[in-house]
Amino acid sequence: MVMRPEPWGEALDAPHGVRGRHGEVPHLLVPAPGGVPFTQAMAQELATQPWLAFACGRYEGIDERVIEHAETVMPVTVVSLGDYVLNGGEVAVLAIVEAIARLVPGVIGNADSLVEESHEDGLLEYPMFTKPPLWRGYGIPDVLLSGHHGQIARWRRDERLRRTALRRPDMIAAAGPIRPGRSGPRGAR
Ligand SMILES: C[S@@+](CC[C@H](N)C(=O)[O-])C[C@H]1O[C@@H](n2cnc3c(N)ncnc32)[C@H](O)[C@@H]1O
Image 1 (spheres, helix red, strand yellow):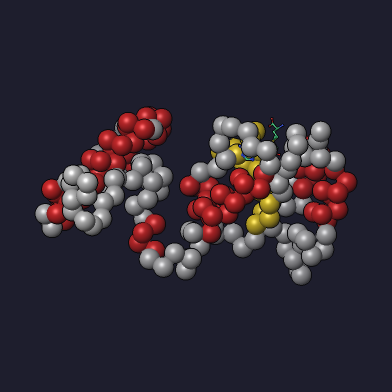
Image 2 (cartoon, rainbow, N blue to C red; image 1 turned 120 degrees about the vertical axis):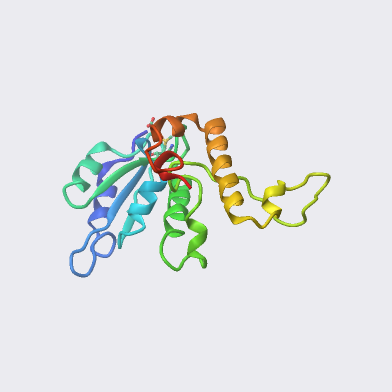
C-alpha cells in the first residue's frame, strides 16, 4: 500500500503549511530507508537553516511523484536513519530533530560540550568517567586523576583512536592517512 499523491500535494501546497508569509519555503526532509544516510555533518548543516519540514511516510512509503513535485518548489532531501526498516517515519524524524536541535546555538547550555563528541571530527568519543573514583571495584584510569592536562589530552586522543578502530573501522578507513602536523585522522587532538 503506497500513500497517494493527492493529500500529500495538498498538504505541501497549503499556504500556512509549508509556505511562509513572504513565500519562503522550508527544506523538506523525507525519511526513507532508501535515502542518503543521516550524519552529524548533515545535522550541522541543517541546524543553520531557518526552516525545516518533514514528510513522514507509512506503509510502503509515499508516491514518488510527490517528491519529484516538491523538488520543483523547495529543497528536498530523502534521508535514512540507518540500514533497517521502521514502520513509519515519525521515529526517524524524532531522532533527526533531536540531533539537529541540540546544535542550534543556545539549546545546549555549554557549547563546549558539543566540540569533542563522537562524529564531530570523524572519530568516536573517548570513554567517560565521573565520581566516585572507585565503584564496585572498578577504578578510573590513573592518568585522569593526575591533573596533568597534556597527558589527559594524549590519553583521550589514544582512546578515541582505539575505540573508533575497534567499533567503527569504517570510520578509520574513511579518515584516510594522518596528515603531516596533525595528531590523528582529520587533525584529531
Ligand atoms: C515500511 S517503511 C517503507 C519502506 C519502503 N517500502 C522501502 O523498502 O524503502 C515506511 C516508512 O517508514 C519510514 N522509514 C522506515 N525505515 C526508515 C529508515 N531507515 N530511515 C528513515 N525512515 C524510515 C519512512 O518514512 C517510510 O516511508
